[in-house]
Image (cartoon, rainbow, N blue to C red; front, side, top):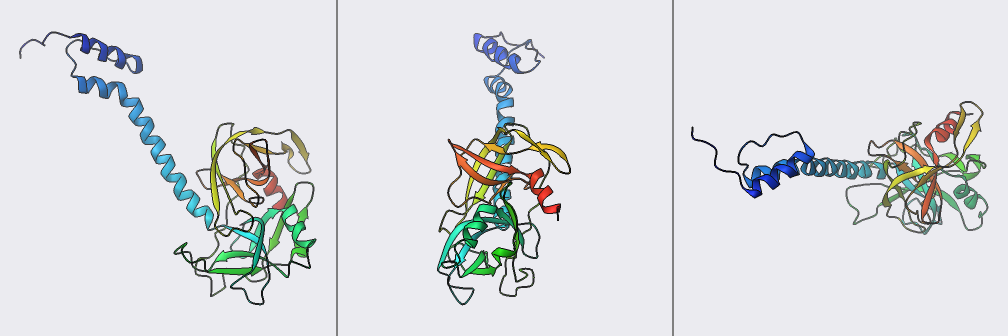
Length: 275
């Protein structure tokens, strides 16, 4: 084989760029394409990983939507064609109708008995299309909810078991609550319903940090609040905060100063397991 052709200034430039990102030897002439690919290899890999994470998060969000429901006061004799007022968001923790929401959402219903004829969580009877909101109301007794006013958490249960309701084609999904503490900067999402809105919204955020710790009766110290770097909206209280793995890491409670605040998953699990 003949000798390598003489190197050019462009070859030297491509080689210097490549050598900044990997160990590479440049004895001869580099084609511009090889130099560019070598230089941009890490960029392409990063872009591919980001695309995979984005796609996975979209799948996760769709899964989470089957586990959340608006908490509403319905004014109707039948569980369809509601005249409703949405007070907050709930997410199911089992397939038989148990759900978590914010205590202040339930208290708002209990204290408004005159206008709240029928407390219910509304789910879609058939989840095949958002064009037709075929909603089904799962009634619950607000006064029977177990409430922790200090933590602002409430656990309620629907009167009818959604797993056995024949009219519900798309059964509610039970969401898994994680107790692990995710580090600052971890990407998460949160979903909830706007006040008097029946279509859920979702926002992407990062964990900004955690507020001060407090002493738990069983598990020692735990964080009081999870802080997100994006604001929430009215009606999202009680909605889940979750990671790309679809595990719930917190429950939305309030917003302020461009941030959202949530009760961490460890505290939610402590509340659920207590009697």
